[in-house]
Image (tube, rainbow, N blue to C red; front, top):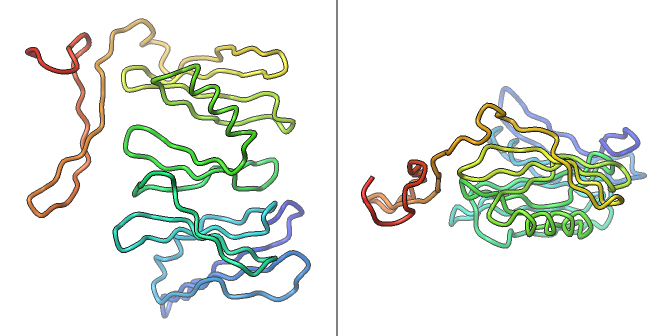
Length: 222
């Protein structure tokens, strides 16, 4: 639905034929137009949502090389835009603003780290500043006020559990809200890293390596 509660996108699945149909209806229109059709109902997973400020639908499409991209049909303009993340990733999604009903960023992950391609430059600038302040850690914006002056922030890393902060841009303050695992505060934790290796058939296999606390990153005996 859009911000007024009007339906703008609909997914139909025929449980007998397993057909999948995605239709959209631009603002001010009464009739529906076909956006995507498939004979595989599993393709319904490709629908990601409707963005009110863009009057557009977002779907995911996988290319022959296995890398995903976002397809954005604009209902009002009748045009389609392909959105490719700035770095390849098999897992891709969207970040939404619950206040505007709009998609504001592409979100990709490589197994350890989330990466954002911001459509909304204002929110993106806030994230960039926090990422610089917490260099070497993963920073996620969990939520923000309607006037975009206060933000709930999640900060974590491969050797530290998540901590929540409240950013008040008006007061220019960053205050801790709490730790997800307070019982681990001050405890030395092992350092986790993500990597991938190729199997004999060329398949990339994701893996994690966790070294004991205090162990050297390279060399040395464990």
